[in-house]
Length: 329
Image (cartoon, rainbow, N blue to C red; front, top):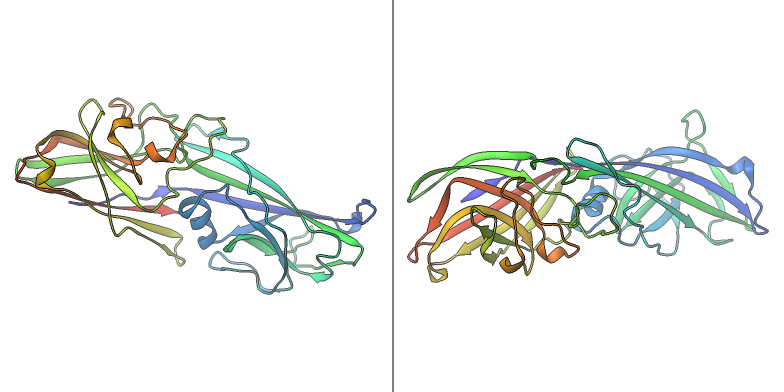
């Protein structure tokens, strides 16, 4: 069976500010650029949220380009300098929005050394391979402007990224899809339940592992109590991004439970988890439809599918599963 999930909604907003200091440590106040809204690119959002995680390394970059940064950009217009690598932060200031999502704010100060940036710049950004976010330098009226930095001055770029992702604070996980499949036993309807973005979904904890950063996954079967029955690794998974509409598709590949896996009854739930998932550590709450919290990416499901009535397979049957998940970024 092949199942396509409805989109998981995420969002990122970004701002930056610029400060210039003399080598003596005194700020050059007339060169201060207060907070400016910037664009989070499609490729940057995909890498930031799904392909890796929001807390990996990054670099600050500056350039001399004069064209507005758009969501389809992969780089600044004309990059001329890049900072040293910076640790990209922690799960700061997370707030429950009360609608099944939470928002966390990551603020990072990126320091260029004295003499690292000399001359006139017109654009700034933050990147990890591709540009995560960036924009032209703008004045208090929102008009493009430039900033000239002397050889005895130092540039400090402060980035703020505000990210909204699914959490586990509702009494029942949100339904993000439904449908039906047919087996030798008849027709089975199903609901698909969203899972939290973080492996440890508790608001305010410091656990920063996400459920979506590894592409290779396993499919896990669970019974009516939510206990793990069996699991299999999928193969051939791919991830693609569409820069035209801000969607990202993730194909988990096909997982097969073969006749040699024997009889499996009461397949009430199927979920997709991280590579090397073991059913021995797996649990779905049959009331809330959320999987267990964990600091480990190895025991975290990315979605839960519930069947009515439950599926089953005999020792002469195979069960093939393939899921495609879609993200709005």
